[in-house]
Image 1 (cartoon, rainbow, N blue to C red):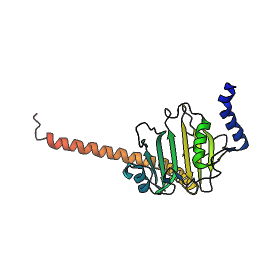
Image 2: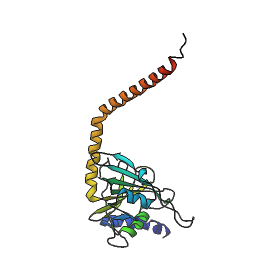
Image 3: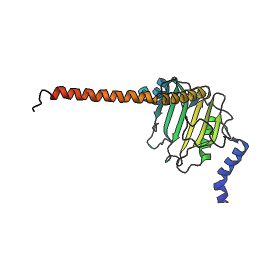
Length: 231
């Protein structure tokens, strides 16, 4: 009986996945935000909420659209005995609008938790999870290390996926603003195409700059050493 009790959560999860639903505390809840971070907000507002500087954002691509990432490592609040399960959150912006949130969990803080434990806790925020596809079918250019979608919380404007990554026992909660996902993906693909197209020219310009810098260095040394030279 004890053995059956220990395996029951996994059996229940498999049963609900087979039916296409995972129970949550509500049929549908607000998917427009993660914690207090609202999809569609600009970089300055998200940085202020996270307590980081907007200048910490990294420019991924500057054309044909501005794609930026801002990383945030949340710290426990309140008594020191409290812990924070999240290792890092990466906010992604398309033309200064938050369109993607990637939440990576600390492997030590969630050690021993089963996928159904994570699904249950997230369902308490976002309502009923639906059956995901067998494999993540999104663009590898946007999510290169995604492997398996365990559960999905779907709304008309936003979507969250709980993902088991391909390395170790790593899990990620990834949310997207649907109206910006396709334009952002298209912009990233176009930026990569432009980068490849412009690579030879950039390499030639870099080599020319290096030669100019070396020549200027030699000329400066010549002006310094010529008057002091004694045959």
